[in-house]
Amino acid sequence: MRGPGEAGLDPARVAEVLVAGAPGRRGSGYRVGDGHVLTAAHVVAGTTSVRVRFDADRPGEWSAPARVVLSAGPADVALLEIEDVPADRTGVEPPRYAAVPDADVVLPFSAMGFPRFKLREGGDTPGRYRDSCHVTGTVSVLSNLREGTLELAVAAPPADPEPHRSPWEGMSGAPVWCGGAVIGVVSAHHRSDGLGRLAAGRVERWYELLTAAESACLRRRAGLPSRTALGLADGVDGRRPAVGLAGLPPDLPLRELAELVDALTALPLLRGGNGMGLVLDSISDRVAANSPRDPRLRMDVYGIVRTCLRYPGTLDQLLEAVRLLEGPSPEVDRLDGAAARLARFRG
Image (cartoon, rainbow, N blue to C red; front, side):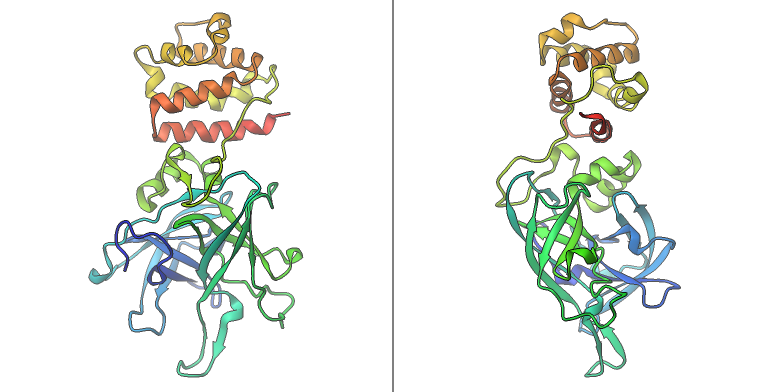
């Protein structure tokens, strides 16, 4: 078992996820701590208990029941809590998580799971079983932008004898590794893309799609960093994806700004002292000069946000100043999520 500081995929931490009460239904996963396994939400949909198995039919084999402690459908990510972890299987550190840049790049990746085409029968192991599949290939970062997933180009498995079922069934939930970090989780095989393409949910999109409670759960139990602390995978050049709000209409209704305003007013930075003054001093002076200031924090924030909408680019300046002054925190993660959802109104 790898210890702290050792990056990359560790096969001893790769899990088969066997769904209780559904023979044959399974997925893949990865230990992200002593007692937790990361997988895809659709793998465990409709159930609260599963079994996780490691190193099947090998000297180090072990398995244990697990319960679903997080299942986030929009992000297609889930977290399982393992029951009865053996004493000699502790000391597991969370992996590093990373983003990929919004740029014209093709990146190498690897993943490990248990797809259906690896079904075996006979040999030294009695009965039928699925062997592991170590998948390598490339990520085309600018594909699947509308879906918001990573396109994984892989070697196609042999011709499928059951056209109504994907040979990749069971691969869902396998983390995607690039530059020593997890950049996504395998989520789907779109048949229209052919047998040599898979889709994976992007780690950076989790911050947009998870609730504040779900993000906190992944930080606490799986080691997910705050959004502001999420870096790029090692050896990857480019800019970390960020949500820009420069294209918002200046007359956006107040109700559409409510979530962003709620997130801003929850920031400790703005709830005491001269936090708002520091923020306004850090951005365009046009905002401070033209905002209808109010001693009530919520009304003050509404007025400042509405003024920013009149001066394109200044709302992004405001949010960046808040991130820098507040630092990584659950409140900043909530703010980033609200900004990402507000971005849908961009022209």
